[in-house]
Length: 425
Image 1 (cartoon, rainbow, N blue to C red):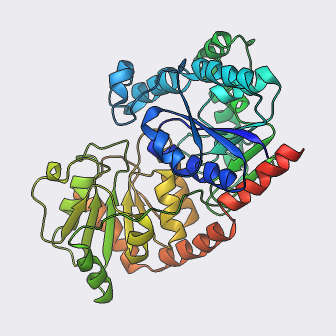
Image 2: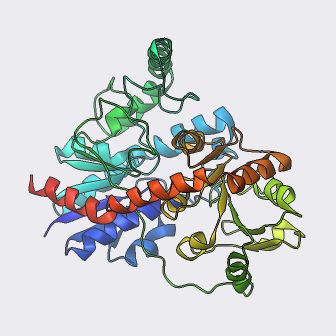
């Protein structure tokens, strides 16, 4: 059996996918070390991995990034996003590499498996000459000559003029990256004792194996997808039993009575209720729906008084809630979107930060929901989008179709097979 390090940035949305991989490998008898922040050590221990703490890398609490990295602020806008890249993602990379190299010198490691945003693993793998595998915890960020640049607010081109546009956009992106991103990337590499690189952010994805969450149909088609990139569906650990709120039977009864259930969530990172939760509650008040909100861990009382058709909890198990849900309103966390699609639930996405606009575009492009093109929609805009999905069943049909493909892709089991093939090679 192999000795494998599974690395995850200490963000809740990343940990979900990486615990699924760690648990699968541990279940196959491998020795699995989970390299992540202290906040999520127990999550990995629960699936059979041993915690490897961040020591040289600066640990942090994902619910309050600004406490450790003040320039990030609230993380919103271009400035917040760039600060997140510079200080959190790239800024912790050299420390991650130092931690992993120290562990490998103590006892040899057979394979690194990493959340694709834990950049220090790529540095450690390069230093050791050791293969590593990347797990895409967001939509596949790999550049393609057939698509607009990752993160750019445009859908794939449909004709010759669109392809010219995409080529021009890629050229502009490369020029900007050379001036803005590459210096930050190379400062990280220098701190890890490595020479400068001109490969851009794609150089931090594994050239050996990339496990992409999702399936064709949720991601844009491209003819230049490298053979080491594999879509594996959704990576998720089976939910552990948890106590349901006293009002849970009302959700079951609403579904039985034909009253649509609308789930509203902002995930666990962006928890300013004025962005989405409160507008959605206001927009759906008085509608013939039961609105089920989750606050991502914040106190429910912080929502203030809610209409009669609204129920709220800090967290709810998606494996129990989504089969009873008719529409999910979300800010676009990739894990939550994949969970909804696998359950056949159409989506309204209001995403503005990090990868969330990219998720929203894929939701609309694939036909499984609506993109509101903002992270702070008005109440009426949410109401119209929910009504649209409830009145037009083709979105739910498309979600069920892609949900079946997600399940068939194999998830953690397929990931485990591919990782063992890489170890054997």
